[in-house]
Image (cartoon, rainbow, N blue to C red; front, side, top):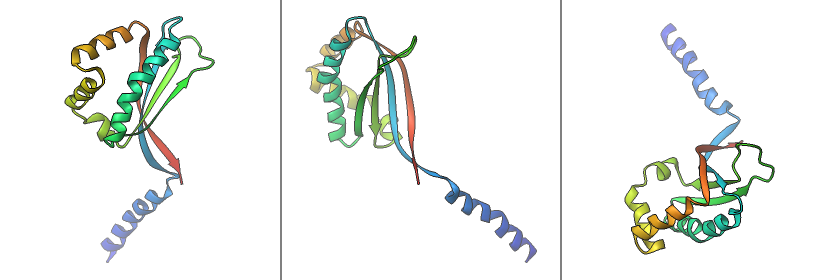
Length: 142
């Protein structure tokens, strides 16, 4: 009987602790910091509107991505990006485990061929620099 009482007392904090959190885990977000070359901000946004947005819409149609956002860093300081690109994923697995073939097929749909997609990516590299990429988990207060 004494052992049963000890076991119950040891397990009680575990069941209470799960309910004690003030938040629940939400969506996973990739957040990418981007610096644009001087005078190329609008060129890059135009490219995002044509290519990145189309790619994300395809992933939304396939149920992988829930939403996306672009934020301008209005008062950026030295070493801070000009833009933040945010993508809300259905799950971390959708982001981490999607095979490369999926992205290659989407690239072919957008550009017509992998070669054209590679060339467009090379050109894009002349107007921007990716500075950071983070995977974040949204937390929702109860």
